[in-house]
View 1: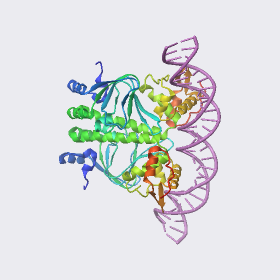
View 2: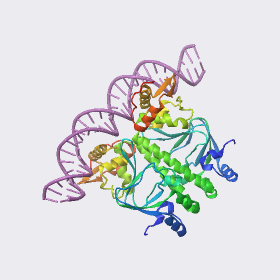
View 3: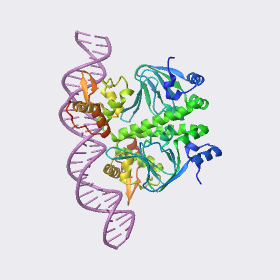
View 4: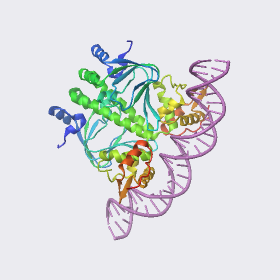
Length: 232
Length: 232
DNA sequence: TGTTTTCTGGAACTTTTGTTGGATTAAGCG
DNA sequence: CGCTTAATCCAACAAAAGTTCCAGAAAACA
């Protein structure tokens, strides 16, 4: 395996022996594009490390609307909460593309944490970090308008979703963006149009580029459209 | 101190010696009603245990709207995230009533966790639990209408906010409810009126009681008003 | 290549939420 | 007790978000 385990926060700083133990405790799973990895509410599926492909974490409400909590690429981890407390999975996971993951069961993870102190304290730090992300996300949902959330997506998620939504073009469909923002396709379309003819985004062919980073930042921070500034 | 430390998840299962160490590491602080405990974004204020009084955890957006993340009574803990990672406080905290708290600094907490393994693994579990709460809260904000959130507040928070909002009457003002739900006072008033004349709540004098628990549950789960059922 | 499917654009409309302002009622206090 | 302050009620309106519907454009694929 050509994986650098040190880039995974949970495994950082472990000695080679501990790392081996962890790898031995995990099972590799392969998923076809579109396959369900696990469902919300089901018994704890364990700790996952994405090895290959793209994984979507989401929730769905009674009316069938989706909320994509994250889109994960290789070396991301997920379901740590259930893996740690042994409770039901807090969300659904599907393989967007063909994907591969390392899975460590709840029991084994507990054993590993008991044996490897570094793993335990890394986990504390990682969970604290996760917590911050959720607090942030929560405030986005309570305080930000959809154009503002969209601006933030373009600005700050350009790293996270690397080549899906870039500095530059979106590979995400409006439907997918809607699920990430927690709204519907049409609303995203409207917001996108809004940002386009406010001059914050620009379209070249199919792709949408950032035209005015400052303006996007203003929108993301204040929830209000920036004064229309002449293009030059 | 007549406190049962075992009721605090972080300190459960610690031997007397470890407990003593923890108590020795903490400082007691006293706050007057209305006093700021710490602010969002400021350098890590440490780990807090409420000893007496009521503490409000909240965020505020650019326009000055409040979102109350929680109202905490004695033996609750807060700011664990910053206390663990040493980063800035993720929210504001104020004493609602006169209050008292035990505070353990980031450094000392790290030392304690290094020395007391039980504290470390309790912390992992507690952070996982916190995470679940935030995920839940996030979905409330993305999927639920305000009447639905209000119903949920009456149903499930009656324990948490014990005598503020009971099975029975509300001591919380509409303003305060609004901050908890992430909306404005007028909207809460409207929603309250809605629940009242749908027969889900009942008013006796100043106080609001639950009249139809089933109906509230239906509303909380499906986001739709239950069919009006004759009262008997 | 033509055909089917998926994605996008956009209008018209509904519902929900947020805002403003004034009238009424209750609570706190000297 | 009267006065002041805080909380509530309610209506009317504005703005944002969600819905419905359909027409085009682009991609996928056979």
